[in-house]
Length: 567
Image (cartoon, rainbow, N blue to C red):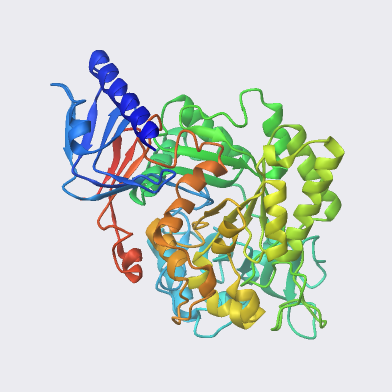
C-alpha cells in the first residue's frame, strides 16, 4: 500500500512539473464535490483541464499548483460534479418537435382522454395552418394512461379530420392509429393481408380495420413525399437537438436507428464541425449495405464528434403494447390474437436473425438489437452462438448489445456473460408501465424487468437509457427509476433490482462508455480522459433517494468547454 501511494505521489509530481514546464493548464475547477466514478468511486475537490482532457484530479491545494497567470480558475462553490452522461439508447434524430404534435399523457404531455387527444391535434392543425389534404402526424399517445383505457380508433379521428389524413403513433413507437382518410390513401382495407412481422387490428367479427396498425403494418401507410429542408435548416435543427441533449447533461448521445439520410446529414455536420457533443449513430439494418458501400463511412471511428457505432435491428415489439415476443403468454387479451397462447411475435425469423449477426460480424460492425421479450432474446443468443461457430470467432471481442433487454431471464444473463453481451436496460419502464406489466405479465415477470442489480451480481456490463422520445430524456429521472423503481401508483417494481445511487450513476457513465468501446477515454473523471463534466444542483449520493429525480443540471462541459449553462 505504501509503495502504491509513493508511486502515485511520484506520478502526480511528474504531472505537475510537466504541466508547469509546458504551460498548458487552461482551466482548473476548484472547491467542488467531485464524484469521479473511478474504480474506487472516490471523490475529489478539483480538476485541471488541458486541451480538452483531464490533466489531473485531486485536492484544491494540489490542483492549484498547476495554474499560472493564463489559467482560468472556476470556483464550483461546493457544487457536485459528475462525469458527462452517456446515452445508452435514444433516438437523437428521431422526432421533429416542429412538425409532430405531442399527444402524450402526464408527465410526457397533458392528454388525459381521447377528447383531449383530438383537441390537441386540432389546435396543432390550426396553429400550423395545415391545409386540407396534408398529412397530420401526432406522437406519444399511451392507451393505458387514457381515461378510456383503450387505443383510439379511426372513428375517433374521422369526424374531427374529414379532409386530412391523420396518424397518431404510440408512445412505444411500435404501433399507430390512422383515420379513414389515411387508410384509404394507403389502400388499407378489409382485403389487406397482415404483413410479415405486423398486424392490422380488425373490428370483432369482421376484417374491417379499426385503424390500429401494429409493428410492420405501420409501414403500409403511403405518405406523399415532402420537400426536403435545406442543409442550413437541417444543421440548425441539429444544433437545437444537441443543446437539448446537453441541457440534460448528455455529452455522448445515440441515434438509435439511423436512416441513410440521417447518416449523410450527420456526416456533413461532422465535416463542417457542427457537432459539439459526440453522436453514436446506429444505421438501421435495412440500410447497412448502402452504408458499407460508401468508403466515406467508417464504423467504429469517432471523428469530429461522430461515430458509426454499429447497426440496429428491431427484433420484436413493445411489452406494454403486447407485441413483444415471450416464451409464455400474456395474461390479458391481446389485440389481433384469437387463440389461447398469445405470446406476441418476433419481427424477423431465426434465419434472418442468423444472417444479420453473421453479416455484422463479417464486416466488423457491432449488432445492437432491440429485444424486449425473453423469446426474442433466445433468438438473439442463438444467432450469436451460430455466428461464433460459423465464423470461428469470439463474440466477447465484439460486445454485441441487447437494446432494452426488458424481460431477460436469469439464465439468459448467464449467457450474456459468456458471450460478452452488453445489457442496455430501460429502468424508466418501472415508473411508466410497471403497473401495466404487473397486469399484463404477472408480478414475477414484472418484478424482473430491467434487472440491473442481478446483472451486476452476475458480472454483466449493464447500461441504462430513456429511449427518448419514448420517455423523457431527463437522466436524473432515469437514475431515480433505477434506484427506487416506483411505478405511477407508488408500487415498487422489483425491490431486489434497486440500485444504489452510485451504481445508477455508473450505468449512465462508465458503463455507457464501455458500451461504445470508449471506457479508456470517457465515463469517469480520471487523468487522461476527456473533460466531459456535469455540474448538478445536489449530491445524488446524499440527498433523499426520492429527491434524485428533482436534481437539475446546472452546467454541461464537453472537453473542457461549456456547452450548456442553466440561466
